Image 1: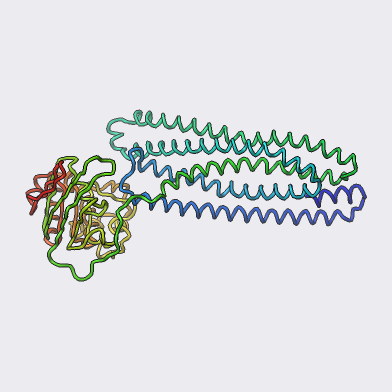
Image 2: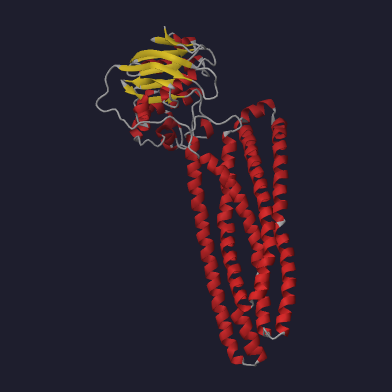
Length: 517
């Protein structure tokens, strides 16, 4: 711009040398094309950067959350999902649009200031001095934008939790007519989210007007100085026009920079929250050992001096538990609600680590086994089968690499050999959320089939027949009795029909003792 404007005024218009008009316009065209290409390259690169960073951060947050034993009382799966999406969106917006603007406009401002310093050092130094109040004002406003953004993201998480909770209980909501009730629960957090968003908009929107007002005051002072320079003969008319034009060009970056700065502050608030999600979770330290050689016919499970206490509890749940089980066989775990049956299952799964003592399967300490080896030796069937919105095959295989024939064999073992033929697409049929459309008995059998695919030595089940009718319960009991001929099967249950079929019973008392009848 200095080359174009200065030459255009001094050489072409004042001196009348119109032969310079063509080179001036050509130079301007080349500069324009180069700038356009640079802008396109910048937007493409920063767009790719935003997508890449978002992918990595999303994966890191998901991996960290999947390792957690449980979520806090104030957290929910829906809220955390909304949190990841909303926080990442703030970061993506900054990286794709804000960061590019910060870089490009900052370079533009520095380049213009450099030329201004060369043209008129005194006036430019005054301009830089006048910019100090602007910088301080933008910093003050930026801190308030970041604080408001943190509140917006927190309220977004709460709104997401409400939505997931209501939609996840759709049948109950319809049965009890909970629409108005659920909407009232959502309305409070939605209103708070609206107020937080409005507050953030006020602080973020104040940055550009502040820059414009302070910029105008600086321009007014500079114009007075520049007119004096022309009158003293220290500047030509072309230099004055070029200088004023460059100052005018500062208007665009001074408009865009505050907006980009607001995006940065919003992304910074989101990044702090994301780092909290990606911080390492407290999980049992796993070893790297693997079990070699053929499995013995007899199966042994030994608990030696096992004690465990929850982090926020004053007393131990289990204290000095000693227990030895031999299989194959079917063993029931009995205990009142809250006595620790589920916690015992999680200790046997390796999801929790005992504070003292050891748990050994076939003589191998669970703490010394690798995670993959532990999952091969021990399988689990939860009370509510967890099924995903993917194919029947994927729901059973779970990425473990079993062949289709192995999956079909497992279905046959649990009495579901005909299920693939009954579904459009067979094993490739895509199940609905939570396996909607399948009966309770089918869902339980699928969960058992999934567990049996790894041919585990120890099979753990949590209330597998609690929600089944008598016929379905009888089928599951028959299935478990068959599996108990070749593996050790531990079942947490209260059902008399299942208790009558067990080889042994373990009783868990509220006092922390575990004994075998």
